[in-house]
Amino acid sequence: MASFILPNAMLGIIGGGQLGRMFTVAARSMGYRITVLEPDADCPAGTLADVHICAPYDDADALDRLATTCAAVTTEFENVPASCLARLAERVKVSPAAASVAIAQDRIAEKRFIAGAGLRVAPYRAIHGPVDLDAPLGDCLPGILKLARLGYDGKGQIRVGTAEEARSAFRTLGEKPCVLERLLPLRTEISVIVARTGPGEETCFPVAENRHEGGILDVSIVPARIAPAVAEQARVMALRLAEAMDYIGVLAVEFFVLDDDSLVINEIAPRPHNSGHYTLDATLTSQFEQQVRTLCGLPPGDTRLLSPAVMVNLLGDIWQDGEPAWDRLLSQPNVLLHLYGKKSARIGRKMGHFNVLAEDTDAALHQADDLKSSLRRNRATASGSPSPSES
Image (cartoon, rainbow, N blue to C red):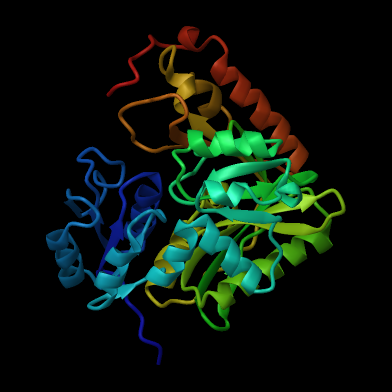
């Protein structure tokens, strides 16, 4: 019989943001206890966890405490030092593995691995120093220069059209290792989220179609409005990549759909993903329950879509004139609001999301766009007095 980690066990998670919070909610609803390692004393996950270890991610004593008190440990984001996960893995089950996280931490390593697995990426050039920009760059221009490490949500990325612009952008980014990636003719962007416990125990969620604003995910539409053959090919590629990584856990794979309907893998995330938040309401199993299940050695749950859905990100921008008009969302019986418990609303900060469920994606998208606009208009005149963004 398989060796499962069963309810009432203590599970650990490194990172206490919104993804850690939603993991904590899923795990506790399943009967597990949770320890969060996070240096922010007011983190969203810490208020819900059984134990909050308030320490840096690489604190040796904190890692030792996780290893001795938890049955298994996961992470909510890929920028936890892979060495910390490797240290933990010497004494406790860790998922995803340090080697998988290390691939996702560095865009150069990531692209090399994906291409080495026989999967298509955009033409790119690894830029380690100024000399790398002296070589002919025509196959990568016009393009985007991206920091190899720590860039996310559009940060650390600059569009360039010429070699001189690329050199200037490299200086702007501090001459740190980068990837110069060719801009491609896009039809749309999609993502596939894989849950994998091991060979033969793997599944995909329905493909999400994603719209971005300012490099940050704005809206996810499910099912994606693409040809069935394209959706199936995306699932096949995502599963193939997870198998090549020998991946255990939840893995998000982002794709570009080109004008000819061919697919290019953009990047990966070794964790639940913003574009999978629709699964909290629209699928039989959420991506966060899958994170619990795969961490505990359980087979992935059923990912069938119960309803077409549209997920809308809520950024701190809409708090700038006072508390948003939540009544406009909550008065709609097919709209589900999820707020992350963050005390400070800053421009560009992810504060929550809402899901709209409807009979078809067009109806859900129309309603979602209308509701998003209503939160931004006349915010200060919504029912009740405006309250500060700090709580």
